[in-house]
Length: 235
Ligand code: TIU
Image 1: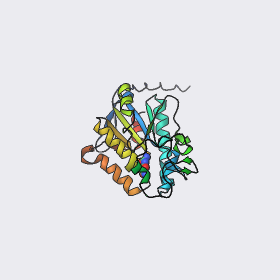
Image 2: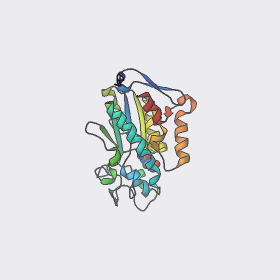
Image 3: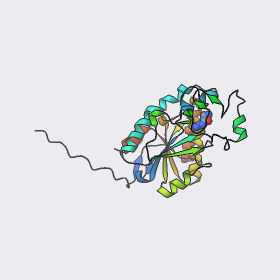
Image 4: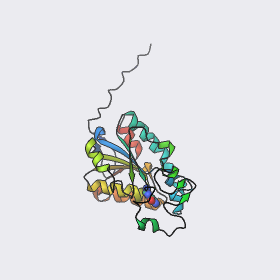
């Protein structure tokens, strides 16, 4: 009779592990590292929302869904901390800078009615996170009015209370909200690792440049990897 090999010891979440990354391996302690998923909202990934209003082909972002789902699933299995963000504004548009409303000179703009409700407004269908990555009860959801997740939000306070020191940042778009958030996190003393397949842009050249900017100069803002390397490290 075949004897089953004993299960390997469970990963100790308080031990540091290393992920193959650029410009050099990213060392992190799972218990104090959160997965921060940026703006995986219908407004950016589905037709009829903010992304399309800006003139973009929203199908370009959909390749990020499967790798995010996989990483999120494994992260949840280990009981690690998950946070989601949503870009959007109060229904009275009180937190919408007039300059942001006017930018682009589009016929429809933030707050106007579209097929998924009012564009980029909290509580509307388009503002919600896509069903594939929907937050579970207990996962933090940060509503942010800007591109960066720290500006005018309680993200920094929540990270301090929970002892979060490092972030794995995924979501959309690479050169806008992901990049801005990584820069903000860096200035607040946090390490950020960005899995390149879990972030996406409407523009391949800006996606590449956005990743390059993070990892250049010895990791001036953070580290870049592939989600497979994170999953391998979490085995
Ligand atoms: N337009 C664009 O590329 N992005 C945004 O407006 N917001 C985020 O990146 N979430």
